[in-house]
Length: 171
Image (cartoon, rainbow, N blue to C red; front, side, top):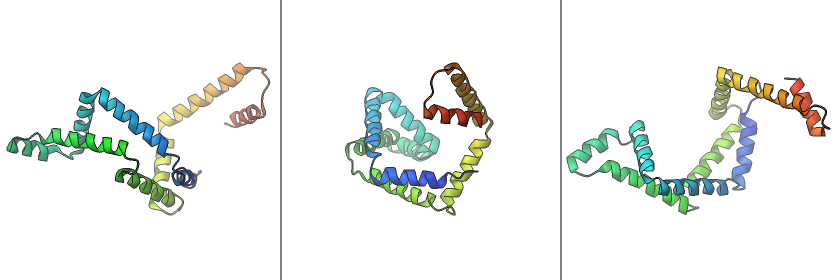
């Protein structure tokens, strides 16, 4: 079976080394900020559910809120929103820098076939490939591609189309 750690590690290393991901990250953060500004109630509800579901604020905020008469849950949500806005507005925000460092470290670890990260990626890939939904998806994709190819009929084919045809026949 083909291992994914080396190619993924090299791709991540290249993308993050030249900061090609920065405009995409900024776009995501800008769109998130726009969505939050248009849907403040939904954003607060989602953040609160996340804080509750992860247990990050759970009993502490509920207990202290009632004891102190201060809505700590609302303060926690407001704090998350404030940090998101700071990350969006500041290209050198510590969380962005940490993301760059974490991905660079992960990419380097993936380049080592014996690393724990490589083993975890391989286990995830194997689990994914063995899942019936993935098998059904791949089967449907191959069937669809064959149908498209048949529908093209006698249309003149490029070199790329010939390579694609050979690949489909080998499936």
